[in-house]
Length: 198
Length: 95
Image (cartoon, rainbow over all chains, first blue to last red; front, side, top):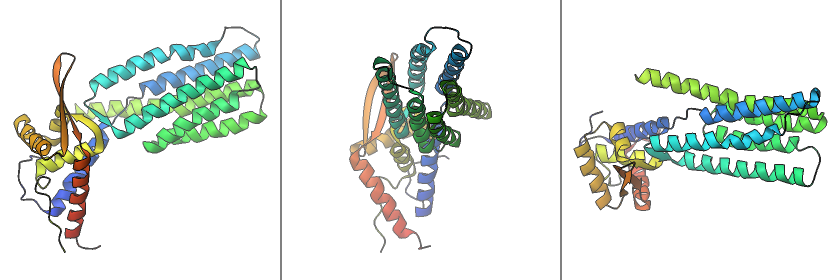
C-alpha cells in the first residue's frame, strides 16, 4: 500500500485500513518458542531422571535444581529477544507478569513443602504448571498450549490418587505436553514464516 | 445523522499509524515505517502532526549507541480513535 497524506478515501476504506493495520500488528507478535522448548525439555528430563532415581534406587542428587540453572538461558534469550524487537505488545506485558507470578509461586510452594516436610507436592506443582499454560494459550489463541494446560489440570487431579513414581512420569509428560510440543510447533511456524519472507 | 470525521485521523498514513499504535504498547519508528510502507520523511511529518494534536507521544533515546524513536498512543489519542471509529460506523448502512 502506498500511503499518502490524503483524506480522499471512503469510510469503508478507512475501516479496511484500520482492520489491516491491527492485523499487521498482531501478526508481528511472533515468538520463536525457544523458552518453551528449553523449559519443557528440562521438566521432562527432571521428571524422568527423578523417576529413574525412585524406581532403580539411584541417587543423582536433587535434579530439580536444574530448573534454577535453566533460568540463565531463559533470561539471556528474553534480553536478546527484547533487543531485537521494535515494538512491545500489550499481550507481551501480561504474559511476562504471568510467568513471573508462576516462578514465584513455584519456588514458594516447593520451599514450603520441603521446609515443613509436608506430603506429596506433585498435584500442586502440576496445577501450577497448568495455570500459566492455560491462561497464555487462551490469551494468544494457541490451542496446543490450551490443551497442555488442560492436560496438566487432569494430571494434577490424577496424581492425588497415584504413587510418587507415577506422579513423576505424569510430571515429565506435563513438561512435554504443556511446553515442549507447543514450543516445537511455535519454532516450526517461526521457521516456516521466515522462509516464506525470504 | 452522519458524525463529523476527525480531520487529523482521516488521512491514510496517520490513520495507519494510529491503528498500529492502538494495537501495541509502544513501537519504534522503524516498525511503523515497515508496516505502513511509507517513506521516512513522509511518516516523520505525519507522526509530528499526530504529536502536535496530542494523539501520540514521541520519545527519542539511544539504543546500543544508535538513535531510537519510540512512539506511543496517548489517552487523548485512544479517545479520538474510538470517536473516529464510532463516527465511521454512522456512515455504514445497517446490516
